[in-house]
Length: 575
Image (cartoon, rainbow, N blue to C red; front, top):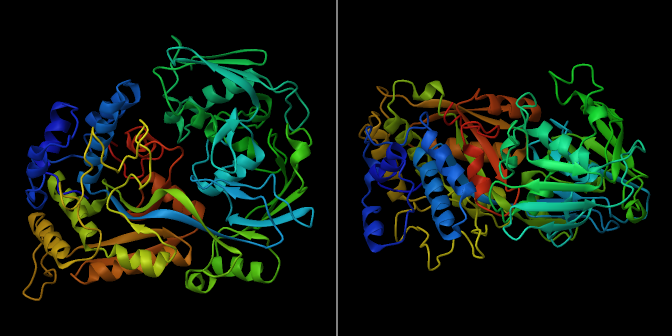
Protein backbone atom coordinates (compact mmCIF):
# COMPACT_ATOMS: atom_id res chain seq x y z
CA UNK A 1 0.00 0.00 0.00
CA UNK A 2 1.63 3.24 -1.06
CA UNK A 3 0.88 6.66 0.29
CA UNK A 4 0.51 7.98 -3.22
CA UNK A 5 -1.59 11.08 -3.71
CA UNK A 6 -4.95 9.73 -4.77
CA UNK A 7 -5.44 12.59 -7.19
CA UNK A 8 -2.40 11.67 -9.30
CA UNK A 9 -3.52 8.08 -9.70
CA UNK A 10 -7.09 9.08 -10.38
CA UNK A 11 -6.04 11.40 -13.15
CA UNK A 12 -4.31 8.43 -14.75
CA UNK A 13 -7.48 6.37 -14.44
CA UNK A 14 -9.89 9.08 -15.50
CA UNK A 15 -7.96 10.57 -18.38
CA UNK A 16 -6.14 7.48 -19.56
CA UNK A 17 -2.86 9.44 -19.50
CA UNK A 18 -0.67 6.40 -19.06
CA UNK A 19 2.56 8.20 -18.17
CA UNK A 20 5.45 6.81 -16.17
CA UNK A 21 5.63 7.37 -12.42
CA UNK A 22 9.14 8.71 -12.86
CA UNK A 23 11.83 9.39 -10.31
CA UNK A 24 12.13 13.15 -10.12
CA UNK A 25 12.42 15.01 -6.81
CA UNK A 26 9.19 16.81 -7.70
CA UNK A 27 7.30 13.51 -7.84
CA UNK A 28 8.95 12.30 -4.66
CA UNK A 29 7.74 15.35 -2.75
CA UNK A 30 4.25 15.23 -4.25
CA UNK A 31 3.80 11.58 -3.38
CA UNK A 32 4.88 12.03 0.22
CA UNK A 33 2.09 14.39 1.22
CA UNK A 34 0.10 11.84 3.19
CA UNK A 35 -2.85 12.34 0.83
CA UNK A 36 -3.87 8.70 1.26
CA UNK A 37 -5.43 9.59 4.61
CA UNK A 38 -7.88 11.96 2.89
CA UNK A 39 -10.78 10.50 0.92
CA UNK A 40 -11.09 12.24 -2.44
CA UNK A 41 -14.07 10.50 -4.01
CA UNK A 42 -13.93 12.48 -7.20
CA UNK A 43 -10.42 11.26 -7.96
CA UNK A 44 -10.25 7.91 -6.16
CA UNK A 45 -9.27 4.79 -8.06
CA UNK A 46 -12.54 2.95 -8.63
CA UNK A 47 -12.17 -0.86 -8.86
CA UNK A 48 -15.51 -1.05 -10.67
CA UNK A 49 -14.28 1.22 -13.46
CA UNK A 50 -11.29 -0.75 -14.65
CA UNK A 51 -11.08 0.12 -18.34
CA UNK A 52 -8.01 2.33 -17.93
CA UNK A 53 -6.14 -0.42 -16.10
CA UNK A 54 -7.05 -2.90 -18.83
CA UNK A 55 -5.79 -0.41 -21.43
CA UNK A 56 -2.55 0.12 -19.50
CA UNK A 57 -1.85 -3.63 -19.40
CA UNK A 58 -2.59 -3.90 -23.14
CA UNK A 59 -0.12 -1.08 -23.80
CA UNK A 60 2.54 -2.73 -21.65
CA UNK A 61 2.13 -5.98 -23.58
CA UNK A 62 2.40 -4.30 -26.97
CA UNK A 63 5.14 -1.70 -26.51
CA UNK A 64 8.67 -2.26 -27.77
CA UNK A 65 10.07 0.62 -25.67
CA UNK A 66 11.36 -1.41 -22.72
CA UNK A 67 12.32 1.60 -20.59
CA UNK A 68 8.80 2.98 -20.90
CA UNK A 69 7.42 -0.53 -20.37
CA UNK A 70 9.12 -0.82 -16.97
CA UNK A 71 7.77 2.54 -15.85
CA UNK A 72 4.26 1.57 -16.99
CA UNK A 73 4.49 -1.66 -15.00
CA UNK A 74 5.36 0.37 -11.90
CA UNK A 75 2.38 2.55 -12.69
CA UNK A 76 0.08 -0.47 -12.94
CA UNK A 77 1.29 -1.74 -9.58
CA UNK A 78 0.67 1.71 -8.09
CA UNK A 79 -2.94 1.57 -9.25
CA UNK A 80 -3.44 -1.91 -7.80
CA UNK A 81 -2.00 -0.93 -4.46
CA UNK A 82 -4.02 2.29 -4.32
CA UNK A 83 -7.24 0.23 -4.39
CA UNK A 84 -6.15 -1.46 -1.18
CA UNK A 85 -7.73 -4.68 -2.48
CA UNK A 86 -4.40 -6.54 -2.60
CA UNK A 87 -2.80 -6.78 0.83
CA UNK A 88 0.69 -8.34 0.57
CA UNK A 89 2.05 -10.10 3.67
CA UNK A 90 5.38 -11.64 2.69
CA UNK A 91 7.41 -12.79 -0.28
CA UNK A 92 7.38 -16.54 -0.74
CA UNK A 93 9.91 -19.23 -0.31
CA UNK A 94 9.06 -22.92 -0.34
CA UNK A 95 9.68 -25.83 2.00
CA UNK A 96 9.48 -29.56 1.48
CA UNK A 97 10.85 -32.77 2.98
CA UNK A 98 12.64 -35.47 1.03
CA UNK A 99 14.04 -38.76 2.31
CA UNK A 100 17.83 -39.08 2.28
CA UNK A 101 17.72 -42.02 -0.13
CA UNK A 102 15.99 -39.87 -2.79
CA UNK A 103 17.87 -37.55 -5.17
CA UNK A 104 17.50 -35.65 -8.44
CA UNK A 105 14.13 -34.07 -7.58
CA UNK A 106 14.27 -30.39 -8.42
CA UNK A 107 12.08 -27.34 -8.03
CA UNK A 108 12.08 -23.94 -9.70
CA UNK A 109 11.18 -20.37 -8.73
CA UNK A 110 7.59 -20.92 -9.82
CA UNK A 111 6.91 -23.82 -7.47
CA UNK A 112 7.05 -26.60 -10.08
CA UNK A 113 8.45 -29.88 -8.72
CA UNK A 114 10.05 -32.26 -11.23
CA UNK A 115 10.06 -35.93 -10.25
CA UNK A 116 10.68 -37.63 -13.60
CA UNK A 117 14.45 -37.89 -13.17
CA UNK A 118 14.41 -38.82 -9.48
CA UNK A 119 16.65 -41.59 -8.23
CA UNK A 120 16.01 -43.83 -5.24
CA UNK A 121 16.66 -47.39 -4.12
CA UNK A 122 13.11 -48.38 -5.11
CA UNK A 123 11.02 -48.29 -8.26
CA UNK A 124 8.21 -46.33 -6.57
CA UNK A 125 8.27 -42.79 -5.21
CA UNK A 126 5.59 -41.97 -2.62
CA UNK A 127 4.53 -38.33 -2.57
CA UNK A 128 2.15 -35.77 -1.17
CA UNK A 129 1.60 -32.52 -3.08
CA UNK A 130 -1.82 -31.61 -1.72
CA UNK A 131 -5.41 -32.73 -1.64
CA UNK A 132 -7.66 -33.66 -4.57
CA UNK A 133 -6.46 -31.55 -7.53
CA UNK A 134 -8.93 -29.03 -8.89
CA UNK A 135 -7.97 -29.66 -12.54
CA UNK A 136 -5.52 -31.94 -14.35
CA UNK A 137 -6.21 -30.33 -17.74
CA UNK A 138 -3.13 -28.13 -18.32
CA UNK A 139 -5.29 -25.45 -19.95
CA UNK A 140 -7.64 -25.24 -16.96
CA UNK A 141 -5.35 -25.69 -13.98
CA UNK A 142 -4.35 -22.56 -12.02
CA UNK A 143 -3.00 -24.13 -8.80
CA UNK A 144 0.60 -24.98 -7.93
CA UNK A 145 -0.15 -28.59 -7.00
CA UNK A 146 -1.96 -29.04 -10.31
CA UNK A 147 0.99 -27.52 -12.16
CA UNK A 148 3.34 -29.99 -10.48
CA UNK A 149 1.19 -32.85 -11.77
CA UNK A 150 1.07 -31.25 -15.22
CA UNK A 151 4.84 -30.88 -15.63
CA UNK A 152 5.31 -34.55 -14.75
CA UNK A 153 2.60 -35.85 -17.08
CA UNK A 154 2.72 -33.48 -20.07
CA UNK A 155 5.56 -32.01 -22.13
CA UNK A 156 5.60 -28.70 -23.99
CA UNK A 157 7.87 -27.09 -26.52
CA UNK A 158 10.11 -26.01 -23.65
CA UNK A 159 10.75 -26.95 -20.03
CA UNK A 160 13.01 -25.93 -17.12
CA UNK A 161 16.19 -27.70 -16.14
CA UNK A 162 17.48 -28.25 -12.60
CA UNK A 163 19.15 -24.83 -12.62
CA UNK A 164 15.90 -23.08 -13.55
CA UNK A 165 16.91 -22.36 -17.14
CA UNK A 166 14.51 -22.70 -20.04
CA UNK A 167 15.50 -25.47 -22.43
CA UNK A 168 13.85 -27.14 -25.39
CA UNK A 169 11.67 -30.14 -24.59
CA UNK A 170 9.63 -31.71 -27.42
CA UNK A 171 11.11 -29.12 -29.78
CA UNK A 172 14.37 -30.05 -31.48
CA UNK A 173 15.22 -26.50 -32.54
CA UNK A 174 13.68 -23.09 -33.14
CA UNK A 175 14.33 -19.93 -35.11
CA UNK A 176 13.25 -16.35 -34.46
CA UNK A 177 12.75 -13.80 -37.22
CA UNK A 178 14.95 -10.71 -37.25
CA UNK A 179 12.10 -8.53 -35.99
CA UNK A 180 11.35 -10.96 -33.12
CA UNK A 181 7.78 -11.47 -34.33
CA UNK A 182 7.88 -15.01 -35.72
CA UNK A 183 9.00 -18.19 -33.95
CA UNK A 184 9.42 -21.39 -35.93
CA UNK A 185 9.79 -24.60 -33.91
CA UNK A 186 10.79 -27.94 -35.35
CA UNK A 187 9.55 -30.81 -33.18
CA UNK A 188 11.59 -33.90 -32.37
CA UNK A 189 10.95 -36.80 -34.76
CA UNK A 190 8.61 -39.67 -33.88
CA UNK A 191 6.83 -37.99 -30.95
CA UNK A 192 3.94 -40.01 -29.56
CA UNK A 193 1.07 -39.67 -27.15
CA UNK A 194 0.85 -42.11 -24.25
CA UNK A 195 -1.57 -44.26 -26.28
CA UNK A 196 1.09 -44.71 -28.97
CA UNK A 197 -0.52 -42.40 -31.52
CA UNK A 198 1.46 -39.76 -33.42
CA UNK A 199 1.93 -36.30 -31.90
CA UNK A 200 2.43 -33.48 -34.44
CA UNK A 201 2.67 -29.71 -34.50
CA UNK A 202 -1.05 -29.55 -35.23
CA UNK A 203 -1.70 -30.82 -31.69
CA UNK A 204 -0.25 -27.55 -30.41
CA UNK A 205 -2.43 -25.53 -32.78
CA UNK A 206 -5.51 -27.33 -31.46
CA UNK A 207 -4.50 -27.09 -27.77
CA UNK A 208 -3.63 -23.40 -27.87
CA UNK A 209 -6.78 -22.37 -29.71
CA UNK A 210 -8.80 -24.49 -27.30
CA UNK A 211 -7.16 -22.70 -24.36
CA UNK A 212 -8.31 -19.28 -25.62
CA UNK A 213 -11.77 -20.36 -26.76
CA UNK A 214 -14.51 -18.68 -24.67
CA UNK A 215 -16.29 -21.99 -24.12
CA UNK A 216 -13.17 -23.43 -22.46
CA UNK A 217 -13.21 -20.55 -19.95
CA UNK A 218 -9.54 -21.07 -19.08
CA UNK A 219 -8.24 -18.83 -16.31
CA UNK A 220 -4.99 -18.45 -18.23
CA UNK A 221 -6.45 -17.53 -21.62
CA UNK A 222 -4.79 -14.11 -21.30
CA UNK A 223 -1.34 -15.73 -21.36
CA UNK A 224 -1.82 -16.27 -25.10
CA UNK A 225 -2.24 -12.54 -25.73
CA UNK A 226 1.37 -12.42 -26.93
CA UNK A 227 0.29 -14.31 -30.06
CA UNK A 228 -1.33 -12.38 -32.91
CA UNK A 229 -4.80 -13.30 -34.12
CA UNK A 230 -5.93 -14.25 -37.60
CA UNK A 231 -8.91 -12.57 -39.26
CA UNK A 232 -11.19 -15.33 -37.95
CA UNK A 233 -10.10 -14.64 -34.35
CA UNK A 234 -7.99 -17.78 -33.94
CA UNK A 235 -4.35 -17.63 -32.91
CA UNK A 236 -1.83 -16.99 -35.66
CA UNK A 237 -0.26 -20.41 -35.24
CA UNK A 238 0.15 -22.83 -38.15
CA UNK A 239 1.41 -26.38 -38.44
CA UNK A 240 3.14 -28.21 -41.25
CA UNK A 241 4.01 -31.71 -40.13
CA UNK A 242 6.60 -31.29 -37.40
CA UNK A 243 6.98 -27.55 -37.93
CA UNK A 244 5.06 -25.05 -35.81
CA UNK A 245 5.07 -21.37 -36.82
CA UNK A 246 3.90 -18.69 -34.36
CA UNK A 247 3.39 -15.04 -35.23
CA UNK A 248 3.40 -12.66 -32.27
CA UNK A 249 1.57 -9.37 -31.92
CA UNK A 250 4.79 -7.72 -30.76
CA UNK A 251 8.23 -8.98 -29.68
CA UNK A 252 8.01 -10.92 -26.42
CA UNK A 253 11.25 -11.43 -24.49
CA UNK A 254 9.71 -14.16 -22.32
CA UNK A 255 8.01 -16.19 -25.05
CA UNK A 256 10.15 -19.29 -24.43
CA UNK A 257 9.07 -19.13 -20.77
CA UNK A 258 5.46 -19.15 -21.94
CA UNK A 259 6.22 -22.24 -24.01
CA UNK A 260 7.41 -23.96 -20.80
CA UNK A 261 4.21 -23.10 -18.92
CA UNK A 262 1.53 -25.83 -18.55
CA UNK A 263 -1.21 -23.82 -20.29
CA UNK A 264 0.94 -24.09 -23.45
CA UNK A 265 1.20 -27.89 -23.30
CA UNK A 266 -0.50 -29.94 -26.03
CA UNK A 267 -3.61 -32.04 -25.47
CA UNK A 268 -4.94 -34.68 -27.84
CA UNK A 269 -8.11 -33.56 -29.62
CA UNK A 270 -9.62 -37.04 -29.94
CA UNK A 271 -9.11 -37.67 -26.23
CA UNK A 272 -10.56 -34.32 -25.18
CA UNK A 273 -13.61 -34.67 -27.42
CA UNK A 274 -14.28 -38.29 -26.50
CA UNK A 275 -15.88 -37.12 -23.25
CA UNK A 276 -19.65 -37.07 -23.65
CA UNK A 277 -20.03 -33.54 -22.27
CA UNK A 278 -16.76 -32.09 -23.56
CA UNK A 279 -18.44 -28.99 -25.01
CA UNK A 280 -20.03 -27.94 -21.71
CA UNK A 281 -17.48 -29.48 -19.34
CA UNK A 282 -14.10 -28.91 -20.99
CA UNK A 283 -12.12 -30.64 -18.26
CA UNK A 284 -14.23 -33.81 -18.30
CA UNK A 285 -11.74 -35.77 -20.39
CA UNK A 286 -9.17 -35.97 -17.57
CA UNK A 287 -11.30 -36.32 -14.46
CA UNK A 288 -10.60 -40.04 -14.17
CA UNK A 289 -7.48 -42.17 -14.56
CA UNK A 290 -6.32 -43.24 -17.99
CA UNK A 291 -6.38 -39.94 -19.87
CA UNK A 292 -3.86 -39.49 -22.67
CA UNK A 293 -0.70 -37.48 -21.98
CA UNK A 294 2.71 -37.00 -23.60
CA UNK A 295 4.95 -36.55 -20.55
CA UNK A 296 6.95 -38.79 -18.26
CA UNK A 297 3.99 -40.32 -16.43
CA UNK A 298 0.37 -41.33 -17.01
CA UNK A 299 -2.32 -41.38 -14.33
CA UNK A 300 -3.27 -45.07 -14.11
CA UNK A 301 -5.31 -45.15 -10.87
CA UNK A 302 -7.31 -42.52 -9.00
CA UNK A 303 -9.34 -43.02 -5.84
CA UNK A 304 -10.82 -39.59 -5.45
CA UNK A 305 -9.86 -37.67 -2.30
CA UNK A 306 -7.53 -40.52 -1.27
CA UNK A 307 -4.80 -41.41 -3.75
CA UNK A 308 -3.49 -41.28 -7.31
CA UNK A 309 -1.01 -43.51 -9.10
CA UNK A 310 1.14 -42.32 -11.99
CA UNK A 311 3.03 -44.88 -14.09
CA UNK A 312 5.98 -44.33 -16.42
CA UNK A 313 4.94 -43.51 -19.97
CA UNK A 314 7.00 -45.72 -22.34
CA UNK A 315 6.32 -43.30 -25.21
CA UNK A 316 7.81 -40.29 -23.37
CA UNK A 317 10.60 -38.89 -25.52
CA UNK A 318 13.06 -39.11 -22.60
CA UNK A 319 11.75 -42.39 -21.20
CA UNK A 320 15.25 -43.87 -21.06
CA UNK A 321 16.14 -41.23 -18.42
CA UNK A 322 13.18 -42.05 -16.15
CA UNK A 323 14.32 -44.46 -13.45
CA UNK A 324 11.32 -44.37 -11.07
CA UNK A 325 8.53 -46.49 -12.54
CA UNK A 326 5.65 -45.34 -10.32
CA UNK A 327 4.57 -42.24 -8.44
CA UNK A 328 2.09 -42.91 -5.64
CA UNK A 329 0.27 -39.76 -4.50
CA UNK A 330 -1.38 -39.38 -1.10
CA UNK A 331 -4.20 -36.87 -1.51
CA UNK A 332 -4.54 -34.82 1.66
CA UNK A 333 -4.19 -31.25 2.92
CA UNK A 334 -4.00 -32.25 6.60
CA UNK A 335 -0.39 -31.39 7.30
CA UNK A 336 -0.28 -33.23 10.64
CA UNK A 337 -1.42 -36.47 8.97
CA UNK A 338 1.00 -35.92 6.08
CA UNK A 339 3.91 -35.31 8.47
CA UNK A 340 3.00 -38.42 10.47
CA UNK A 341 2.97 -40.52 7.30
CA UNK A 342 6.39 -39.17 6.33
CA UNK A 343 7.85 -39.94 9.75
CA UNK A 344 6.33 -43.43 9.63
CA UNK A 345 8.19 -44.09 6.38
CA UNK A 346 5.03 -44.16 4.25
CA UNK A 347 5.99 -41.13 2.17
CA UNK A 348 9.29 -40.17 0.51
CA UNK A 349 8.44 -36.54 -0.32
CA UNK A 350 6.01 -34.07 1.25
CA UNK A 351 5.30 -30.51 0.19
CA UNK A 352 4.06 -29.20 3.53
CA UNK A 353 4.81 -29.56 7.25
CA UNK A 354 2.83 -28.51 10.35
CA UNK A 355 3.62 -24.95 11.31
CA UNK A 356 4.63 -25.86 14.86
CA UNK A 357 7.26 -28.34 13.58
CA UNK A 358 9.28 -25.88 11.50
CA UNK A 359 11.69 -24.76 14.22
CA UNK A 360 12.57 -28.38 15.02
CA UNK A 361 13.16 -29.13 11.34
CA UNK A 362 15.49 -26.25 10.44
CA UNK A 363 18.59 -28.34 11.17
CA UNK A 364 17.18 -31.54 9.62
CA UNK A 365 19.02 -32.41 6.37
CA UNK A 366 15.76 -33.79 4.95
CA UNK A 367 14.08 -30.37 5.32
CA UNK A 368 14.56 -28.14 2.26
CA UNK A 369 14.03 -24.39 1.96
CA UNK A 370 14.07 -23.25 -1.68
CA UNK A 371 13.59 -19.91 -3.39
CA UNK A 372 10.27 -18.93 -4.92
CA UNK A 373 9.23 -15.88 -6.88
CA UNK A 374 5.87 -14.84 -5.52
CA UNK A 375 3.81 -13.12 -2.84
CA UNK A 376 1.59 -14.42 -0.05
CA UNK A 377 -1.22 -11.91 0.29
CA UNK A 378 -4.81 -11.21 1.28
CA UNK A 379 -7.35 -10.37 -1.39
CA UNK A 380 -10.46 -8.27 -0.86
CA UNK A 381 -13.60 -8.83 -2.88
CA UNK A 382 -14.28 -5.26 -4.01
CA UNK A 383 -17.93 -6.23 -4.61
CA UNK A 384 -18.41 -7.53 -1.06
CA UNK A 385 -21.42 -6.23 0.90
CA UNK A 386 -18.77 -5.03 3.36
CA UNK A 387 -18.36 -1.96 1.16
CA UNK A 388 -22.03 -1.26 0.49
CA UNK A 389 -22.91 2.36 1.13
CA UNK A 390 -19.28 3.41 0.84
CA UNK A 391 -17.87 5.55 -1.92
CA UNK A 392 -14.89 4.19 -3.88
CA UNK A 393 -12.57 6.41 -1.87
CA UNK A 394 -14.01 5.25 1.45
CA UNK A 395 -13.82 1.59 0.43
CA UNK A 396 -10.19 2.02 -0.63
CA UNK A 397 -9.44 3.71 2.71
CA UNK A 398 -11.00 0.82 4.64
CA UNK A 399 -8.85 -1.73 2.83
CA UNK A 400 -5.64 0.29 3.14
CA UNK A 401 -6.31 0.77 6.85
CA UNK A 402 -6.45 -2.98 7.41
CA UNK A 403 -3.12 -3.35 5.63
CA UNK A 404 -1.50 -0.86 7.98
CA UNK A 405 -2.74 -2.65 11.09
CA UNK A 406 -1.10 -6.01 10.36
CA UNK A 407 2.22 -7.00 11.91
CA UNK A 408 4.01 -8.64 8.99
CA UNK A 409 7.25 -9.06 10.93
CA UNK A 410 5.43 -11.29 13.40
CA UNK A 411 3.85 -13.33 10.62
CA UNK A 412 7.15 -13.81 8.76
CA UNK A 413 9.26 -14.57 11.83
CA UNK A 414 6.86 -16.59 13.97
CA UNK A 415 4.58 -18.25 11.43
CA UNK A 416 6.67 -18.40 8.25
CA UNK A 417 9.91 -19.07 10.17
CA UNK A 418 12.02 -19.81 7.09
CA UNK A 419 13.34 -16.37 6.18
CA UNK A 420 10.33 -14.88 4.41
CA UNK A 421 10.61 -11.12 3.86
CA UNK A 422 7.64 -8.93 4.90
CA UNK A 423 5.95 -7.42 1.85
CA UNK A 424 4.39 -4.05 1.17
CA UNK A 425 3.91 -4.39 -2.60
CA UNK A 426 2.55 -7.14 -4.85
CA UNK A 427 5.44 -7.63 -7.30
CA UNK A 428 7.96 -9.76 -5.38
CA UNK A 429 11.55 -9.01 -4.53
CA UNK A 430 14.04 -10.28 -7.08
CA UNK A 431 11.71 -10.16 -10.08
CA UNK A 432 13.37 -9.00 -13.30
CA UNK A 433 12.37 -5.68 -14.89
CA UNK A 434 12.25 -6.95 -18.48
CA UNK A 435 15.38 -5.13 -19.57
CA UNK A 436 18.22 -6.86 -17.76
CA UNK A 437 17.75 -5.45 -14.27
CA UNK A 438 15.63 -6.03 -11.17
CA UNK A 439 12.20 -4.41 -10.96
CA UNK A 440 12.53 -3.29 -7.33
CA UNK A 441 16.07 -1.94 -7.60
CA UNK A 442 16.83 1.63 -8.61
CA UNK A 443 18.41 2.23 -11.99
CA UNK A 444 19.02 5.15 -14.34
CA UNK A 445 15.48 4.96 -15.72
CA UNK A 446 13.50 4.54 -12.52
CA UNK A 447 13.85 5.13 -8.80
CA UNK A 448 11.73 2.54 -7.03
CA UNK A 449 9.64 4.07 -4.21
CA UNK A 450 10.48 3.14 -0.63
CA UNK A 451 9.58 4.39 2.82
CA UNK A 452 12.32 7.04 2.81
CA UNK A 453 11.53 8.57 -0.58
CA UNK A 454 8.12 8.39 -2.16
CA UNK A 455 5.98 6.81 0.47
CA UNK A 456 5.73 3.03 0.61
CA UNK A 457 4.41 2.22 4.04
CA UNK A 458 6.69 0.41 6.47
CA UNK A 459 5.60 -3.25 6.55
CA UNK A 460 6.70 -3.51 10.19
CA UNK A 461 4.04 -2.92 12.82
CA UNK A 462 4.35 0.63 14.20
CA UNK A 463 2.36 3.25 16.06
CA UNK A 464 2.65 5.48 12.99
CA UNK A 465 0.95 2.83 10.85
CA UNK A 466 -1.81 2.40 13.45
CA UNK A 467 -2.38 6.16 13.59
CA UNK A 468 -2.59 6.36 9.83
CA UNK A 469 -4.97 3.39 9.74
CA UNK A 470 -7.30 5.11 12.20
CA UNK A 471 -7.20 8.30 10.16
CA UNK A 472 -8.15 6.32 7.05
CA UNK A 473 -11.02 4.63 8.85
CA UNK A 474 -12.28 7.96 10.17
CA UNK A 475 -12.18 9.35 6.63
CA UNK A 476 -14.33 6.36 5.63
CA UNK A 477 -16.96 7.23 8.23
CA UNK A 478 -15.88 5.18 11.23
CA UNK A 479 -15.69 6.62 14.74
CA UNK A 480 -13.31 5.86 17.58
CA UNK A 481 -13.84 6.25 21.31
CA UNK A 482 -11.48 7.73 23.84
CA UNK A 483 -10.00 4.26 24.42
CA UNK A 484 -8.78 4.14 20.82
CA UNK A 485 -11.29 1.44 19.88
CA UNK A 486 -13.97 1.59 17.21
CA UNK A 487 -17.21 3.02 18.48
CA UNK A 488 -20.26 0.75 18.66
CA UNK A 489 -21.94 3.37 16.45
CA UNK A 490 -19.81 2.28 13.50
CA UNK A 491 -18.98 -1.44 13.81
CA UNK A 492 -16.61 -3.07 11.34
CA UNK A 493 -16.82 -6.85 10.94
CA UNK A 494 -16.19 -9.35 8.16
CA UNK A 495 -15.37 -13.00 7.38
CA UNK A 496 -11.91 -14.21 6.37
CA UNK A 497 -11.85 -17.20 4.02
CA UNK A 498 -8.94 -19.65 4.05
CA UNK A 499 -8.18 -23.24 3.17
CA UNK A 500 -6.94 -25.87 5.60
CA UNK A 501 -3.35 -25.83 6.80
CA UNK A 502 -1.90 -24.91 10.16
CA UNK A 503 0.19 -22.10 8.65
CA UNK A 504 -2.75 -20.50 6.82
CA UNK A 505 -4.92 -20.66 9.93
CA UNK A 506 -2.12 -19.21 12.06
CA UNK A 507 -1.79 -16.26 9.66
CA UNK A 508 -5.55 -15.70 9.86
CA UNK A 509 -5.45 -15.75 13.65
CA UNK A 510 -2.56 -13.25 13.72
CA UNK A 511 -4.50 -10.87 11.46
CA UNK A 512 -7.60 -11.38 13.60
CA UNK A 513 -5.65 -10.37 16.71
CA UNK A 514 -4.09 -7.29 15.08
CA UNK A 515 -7.45 -6.00 13.88
CA UNK A 516 -9.15 -6.70 17.21
CA UNK A 517 -6.65 -4.29 18.81
CA UNK A 518 -8.66 -1.39 17.33
CA UNK A 519 -12.09 -3.05 17.55
CA UNK A 520 -12.40 -4.66 14.09
CA UNK A 521 -14.16 -8.04 14.33
CA UNK A 522 -12.94 -10.79 11.97
CA UNK A 523 -14.29 -14.34 11.91
CA UNK A 524 -12.35 -17.14 10.21
CA UNK A 525 -13.96 -19.60 7.81
CA UNK A 526 -11.89 -22.64 6.82
CA UNK A 527 -12.89 -24.95 3.98
CA UNK A 528 -11.50 -27.73 1.75
CA UNK A 529 -9.05 -26.77 -0.98
CA UNK A 530 -11.33 -27.16 -4.00
CA UNK A 531 -14.28 -25.47 -2.27
CA UNK A 532 -11.94 -22.66 -1.21
CA UNK A 533 -10.68 -22.14 -4.77
CA UNK A 534 -14.20 -22.11 -6.22
CA UNK A 535 -15.58 -19.70 -3.59
CA UNK A 536 -12.68 -17.28 -3.99
CA UNK A 537 -12.82 -17.37 -7.77
CA UNK A 538 -16.59 -16.76 -7.77
CA UNK A 539 -16.24 -13.80 -5.42
CA UNK A 540 -18.21 -15.49 -2.64
CA UNK A 541 -16.16 -13.95 0.14
CA UNK A 542 -15.31 -10.70 1.92
CA UNK A 543 -11.57 -11.18 2.44
CA UNK A 544 -9.53 -14.28 1.63
CA UNK A 545 -6.04 -15.62 2.00
CA UNK A 546 -4.28 -15.73 -1.34
CA UNK A 547 -0.92 -16.29 -2.92
CA UNK A 548 0.63 -16.00 -6.35
CA UNK A 549 3.77 -17.71 -7.55
CA UNK A 550 4.98 -16.14 -10.76
CA UNK A 551 4.56 -18.14 -13.95
CA UNK A 552 7.64 -16.52 -15.48
CA UNK A 553 10.14 -13.90 -14.41
CA UNK A 554 8.55 -10.66 -15.57
CA UNK A 555 6.29 -8.24 -13.63
CA UNK A 556 3.60 -8.38 -16.31
CA UNK A 557 2.73 -11.83 -14.97
CA UNK A 558 1.83 -10.29 -11.60
CA UNK A 559 -0.11 -7.45 -13.25
CA UNK A 560 -2.01 -8.95 -16.18
CA UNK A 561 -3.87 -11.35 -13.85
CA UNK A 562 -5.92 -8.39 -12.57
CA UNK A 563 -7.49 -7.34 -15.86
CA UNK A 564 -11.29 -7.37 -15.97
CA UNK A 565 -11.58 -10.55 -18.02
CA UNK A 566 -8.80 -12.55 -16.35
CA UNK A 567 -9.87 -15.82 -14.77
CA UNK A 568 -7.41 -15.12 -11.94
CA UNK A 569 -8.99 -11.78 -10.99
CA UNK A 570 -10.19 -12.92 -7.55
CA UNK A 571 -10.66 -9.31 -6.38
CA UNK A 572 -13.38 -8.89 -9.03
CA UNK A 573 -11.90 -5.69 -10.48
CA UNK A 574 -14.04 -4.35 -13.31
CA UNK A 575 -16.74 -6.95 -12.74
